[in-house]
Image (cartoon, rainbow, N blue to C red; front, top):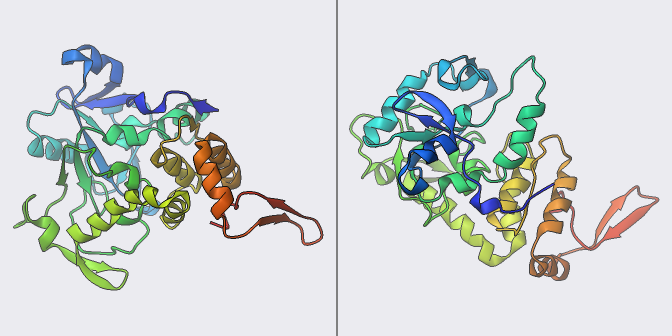
Length: 303
């Protein structure tokens, strides 16, 4: 139930932009100089489920329906990647490269892959160029709904995908006419938490969140819990990665969040557990009112 060497796990697949197909990472590695695969990683927020459609495509060999916004064509994404990074050969897009759900099939293979692929997603955004869609995959950048849970600024996975110092460069996808990659961060303004700020300022606040690790496990855990995710267990997986635990707990999207939290605690450095023990604001009591049991650590709900 643990990933022994988590920070050396590469992506399982990449999108070969030249031949327009998804291939195993090791095949791209075999034809890349020194075995290093240079690729563009796409970071985006997911739109509401009612706005998604599962597209059957030869790009992934019809292996699973690719969930994308209804108005989107994957060729638009491919063209935008190549337009911004003309020499790019490979790209990583979660909808294409992470095994997605099939409506009628047994999901055992998907679940087995996600046990490793989800906790190590942060690796994909290290030492790469990033194409970032703030308002949804393929959608135009706009100053709309910056407080919405679906916005890129508010997602749990955004923290792993935007660690300062690990990314070569970031280009915004869906730039409106008249904006350039050099000025959009300062020129586009929106409302965040009741205050008008530039997109650049909002992104800077988010990047600074990762520095909360210096303020302790609680600070980072509270920030992660405040963010949105499709499954609450995603927050534990993201927290475990950001804490750089020696071994990462394998991912199980069906697991109760308290069990995920316990597995995270067990995988922590002893110093982190010591911090939790000595700084936990209250003794955690769980059980019925008649039979309560005290624990040395707070429950995730208490956090």
